[in-house]
Image (cartoon, rainbow, N blue to C red; front, side, top):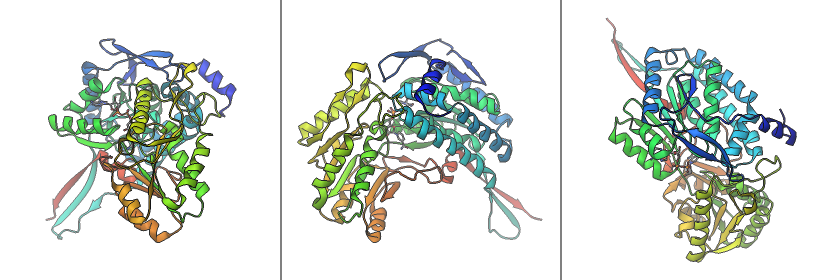
Length: 498
Ligand code: NAD
């Protein structure tokens, strides 16, 4: 189905808005029947009431997950058998692509173009990639003495809770559940309270693909109750978390307070994007830099939110980005031609606005934007905003705003650029633009970040390369073969040969 106005209208008019928990292969209300209002930031309308998972629901889902894991219905299948089921799941996502795209767009306000043409295809690719790799990996035999056979094998860790954010609702969920399921674990998914619907919907799709009942559950709810109870549960073996650093630190504490479960964290960022004057295509660099902060309304963990420009070209380069920002204004998320959509909710909108005011008070100057916009829609929208004359010790250069707000800083030489880049509690990503290969490689080696993009910003990202953070951007990696390690135990077996 192509992304036309007619197809969007038709699919939307027949759309079911999922609202229930998914436990043991079926949808059900929460035991207390408690629910929460699910509001669309597109126009502030109430979409539906979503059931809220509390302790009793969590206990039920965890006991089913543990039981199915111990009985081996999924964990003992061969990798090849699990592969077939996940490949079928990928086909079902393609079948329901527009419906899932609409659920995410309505839930969190990003454009239908993004959900349909980026989030869904990349989610499908991620599932296929993990399904295809799993039966091509081998365990090891140790180079021990001849009297012994030393086997180093990998086993699923058990019950995994995946706790995910709202900025790419389906995609972030798939980053956790594809590698966790393919390695044989049981998985409980807790979507963000702002964007529960696509997560709930995939419960039925995984069942339809052939995942046995109990192996996969979805528990909508909030962080302090549902998320915290999952993290403290003694029968959960691993929490795979994507979200803010603040909550990431709590997740580590909950692990220590309970069963020392494994914790994998993908947290925030304040990523530097360095433009050297010798970059030979400053137009392309400007376009990528604008996209790196205004794409997805700036609600991107690895957004290039600190643009660090060599002094000789600072003024011209900022001008280029300002001109581009004018074409990146928000508009109706359901229009397939819109570049940017709504901010996820009023709290996030107020947070962005608060940071813009802080930036002004700190002495930075607004070059463009700086305002809440499209108020007449009843939704949450913010103009692409660029600050100049920013100092790296200002709050707007140190703290994650998670909105379309770009801070620009200037540097004189290589060492100063790297020093500004590294002067951050975060270390998720960085961009480097230069025509000098030696300078590019040196920068990549010296910048303390999980990913460095050279002469691009996030352009070629696919499932093959791991993504994750240094410093307070996280622990562990999503994507690539490395992500499988999050969900596997290493077993050493010593065999005495007589
Ligand atoms: P958040 O930390 O508020 O929430 C993330 C998830 O944690 C949600 O499901 C929430 O319900 C849950 N949660 C909240 N409090 C909890 C608690 N006390 N115990 C357990 N779970 C709890 O983050 P958010 O606002 O949803 O997402 C934005 C953040 O996510 C940003 O900081 C962004 O950088 C980060 N992020 C990181 C990556 C990455 O790959 N590094 C990707 C996307 C988003």
